Length: 216
Image 1 (tube, rainbow, N blue to C red):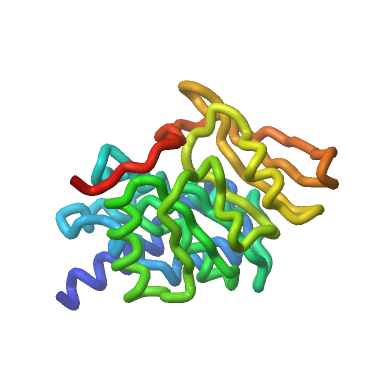
Image 2: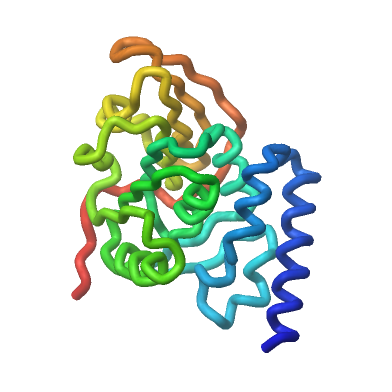
């Protein structure tokens, strides 16, 4: 077991250096990747791949995103300690854990019940500060709105109006938008009628879906 832990630690350090070389320069993001153990968010038979820069399979045809994608979105979000952040697409819970490790107050919504329950069980052990919600990501989480930042971790066909309304003025949303490939967008809310938008290249995400899926 000690040998396994040593190997995982070495693999994590290697991944962090790879992220740095690929342009992740926010030291707070890199420190969060050092704090959060990605292998805890995948099945044990995938632990030897947990610190490779690749997406890994989860239940229900979903994936835990490439570490670089997680780091890139997080860097675009420009996270500040104490900010209230909404994540749309909890998935494994890894992105939420990264944001929390950076000092954010994290609220995360997931529309697949099995994923929601799995992430809830894990994060109750690892970081019980994160608030998880089972619901439609297109509707966000209005109970705790408005948010300083919103991050969407699945491919949206368009930018949901409900999410824009849940941002504070001056707030930022990072969201991949498109049908097959997804253009990464960073949207800054000026006021309820005006927004500034930047684009940062194309990525591939699982699609953002509306309907809830219940356990059968």
